[in-house]
Length: 303
Image 1 (tube, one colour):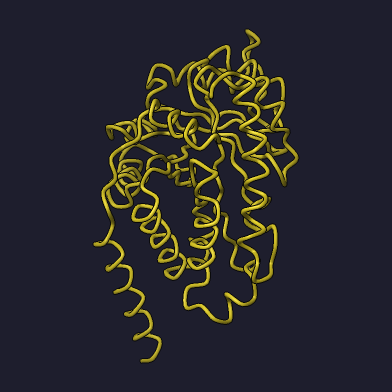
Image 2 (tube, one colour):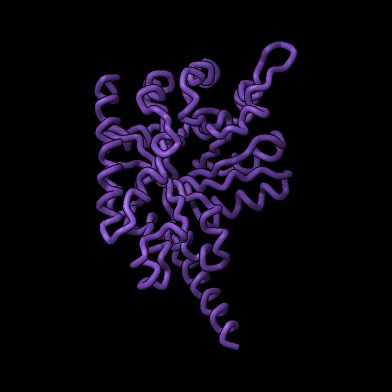
């Protein structure tokens, strides 16, 4: 009976969060660039909030330690970043409690930082009717700005996400992980690599006003090949920091005349410290990246 009451309590909390969500106007490409200029930053903070890595005092004293952690990170970094990217896997693994933490995080951003771009890092991709349900979840029920999508199943798995005016699809194109070599760089009989085929084909589905691409920071000069196909699109770039990607190299090959980059750092910022001063340490790491970005933006005469 006690467990049933606990589940009911969690369920009611989830319902409460659902009904308190705030509708935020969609963000255009120009507004995203304006936000970059205003904050002198194109930093995206990844909220990969692994409960096993949270500071001990949060686990001992907070009813929802993941949300408490996220809230502190957000408050500490909001003025030096333009976007947040919660990774759904780090919430879904905790069941109903994890989903509540995620929903509370989205609501907190909507309520306190409505001008920040929110990317749900979910990497969804399935047949059309299933994708319709995923799209409804992220863009209607959660009201995030963007969702990451895997393109392997083709147009009908992506198009449901593109049916929401003002919302963005962030399509996987050229990732940083070792296994990306299994497929993404494979060439067909004409010498076209798979990631290039994905980019070219997706240009038939959407444009730079509602499509972004994931390109890993460790890809270096391959950004030039990406930019030959999608010169105007924004790129979401994970891998700077803990994964060893070079910010300077990413910008040299990937930046365009509206910046065109959202550079994500997750572990390097949010797990910079495990003590009660974790938020201060996260802020210091975020400022370090923001200052580098400001210098680059000025050198490129984008400020």
